[in-house]
Length: 293
Image (cartoon, rainbow, N blue to C red; front, side, top):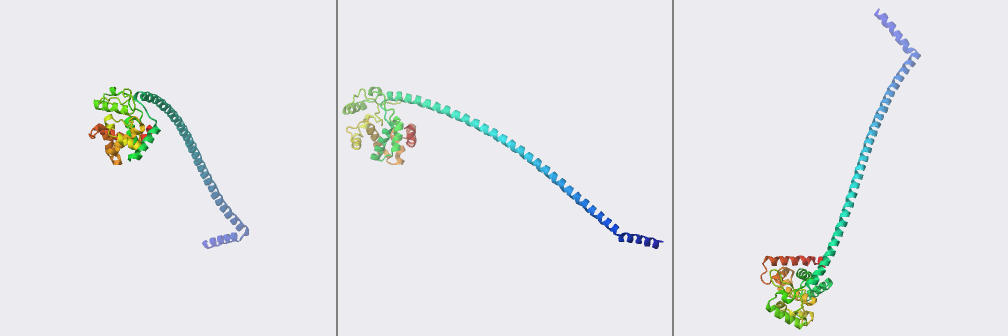
């Protein structure tokens, strides 16, 4: 029976395989199955591409929002900076106006002080006199100008008192009268420095020499300037007297300027605090005198 069954089934299978229509049917079925698989793969690719496209679109939207946010922040910052700049410019204008107003008031005050404190000199003439004295003595021009700033504010305040008001001693009075007589000045009206709270006045001209000190330099001043008699109220003679004294006290070299300045103010005892402070002020203005021109 088994042999008969297998024999019959084998003939059935063989007959199907040998049948041309059956073969074409099987071929078509395989093709459809392959096509179905390709369609599924293609659909999956399309779906993946669409998903990727949606993802990129979302990223672009986020980037657009971030850009808009940054632009808004930039505009706000730019606006804030512009407002700050305007505010600063406004403040600068206000400060400039205040400084100009203060300078005008200061000029008016200085004008009144000059009238009270004696003859003043043009700053260009001061610089020329310092150049001339420097050339003759070897003392630095800027150091001489630093001295003049401290002594008389570059010749602006040379003295506003008479010899009696100055409280100068008898020896200075005697020589003062002789100097005025030689120069044909009225000693009663000629102005000298006023007395300080801690001492006497009586210093003459831009260099602020006391009469007794001046006599020791007259001949050297006359030699350098050609003016005879030497005049302590002359800008050229006064600055020359200052330069000669500074040179004698060691200011021919820069290293000796500090001590020379202190001796100019204090004489021999230059270690006192007031003398040291004076010397420091002179050295400062020697480098910054142009601020006073």
